[in-house]
Length: 347
Image (cartoon, rainbow, N blue to C red):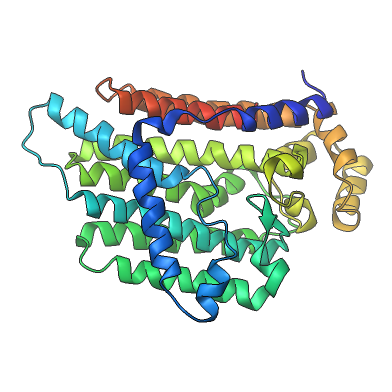
């Protein structure tokens, strides 16, 4: 078993490995980035000035990548079944991929306000530079652009996007309402991260499948793949919040503990220890929230890190099993590699 220091180092190394799964769609992702930049830099005035400070496409573009890969994997599966289908307008597919990334960026802007984040994607956050009001309004500005980009999309596509966005907000509100509730059950935690994070992964995969003309069987398969991937990704992200190095991850860490958010490893720890020691730990969680090193030692000592990693691995295994229902293709292999990337973040 890795101790806390080894876990931190191992996790950082995993996140630094080159992410090669999206080589297959790098040209399309370039178009997505170009469209996002165009949508956000066309604005003059304060919004345009703030956008210039954003590292808009500094992430791995995981969500738009899932749209594009799921589209290709579903298209290949339909071809295998000799179903009548035609490729969508490339501009529409790129627009859908850009929309989900812009929604994600908007949620990051709002999250940094909620968590008092100081760094994101290796750069100072908007709220740290210009205040919470500017960050919230800039997030709203991104969402207003999304509304415009949804015009003329098929109603089914708009419904998927709208439903996912609403569920993200519901998940965030649910987590906020359960803060400092150290008796939170594991099932409730999974429900929260499903809503606030995994639903967008799932929506991305469903949007790709729908765009390819996939039948309900393949659409659900890819949607479920995205959901399992998203849950694993968030469990891993919560582990990084405790074990990671901000200079490696490029974002403010420790916000879950600082904001009294019970995460899976902490829930396991509180279920494992008993009596006076448990009460003392809760008291310290409520008052001494900055001491991540001591918490990490306890989480390692009681096997809580290992438990959370196993849970993440279990969701990744489910995601990979689902992909077995698709025709083997480069796109399916890339989705498998994407799932493996999420697993590495937790291990």
